[in-house]
Length: 156
Image (tube, rainbow, N blue to C red; front, side, top):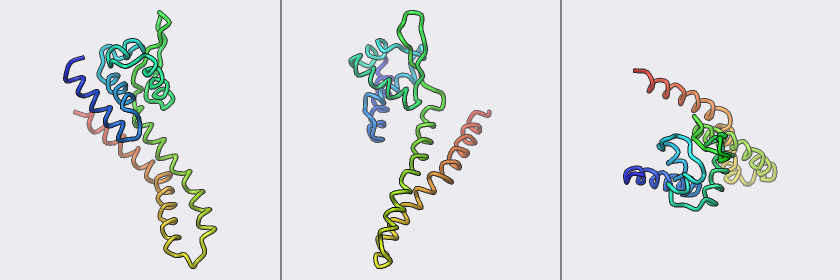
């Protein structure tokens, strides 16, 4: 790995940390974005990133479960991993969809807050409305806008 590649991988690791994931997860994903060949075994990932194979295995499983990487068969019994096209986008879409889980607790809070607690009710209503917005309107609109943006970038 070149010094520039190392810097990119480390920067993506820090970015993933900001998102609440582990730095190692970001580094693995970063390396899979730029490595050649584009598919790597756990051993190759561990060697390239100077991380234990056990840590790489854990992170690879998490990335696989999140839809960010794919596991491919190989003739020598070692699974190979590569970035799933659109994988990062699907994570964001899933996160926005999960906002629906905030609606029920908000409705419960509204059912227990009396009219004499207008300020609290307003805060809960704002939270509930934002959850509904993310679940319905925003997610669909964002994904549509992303598709249009991506297509525009690909046209000469």
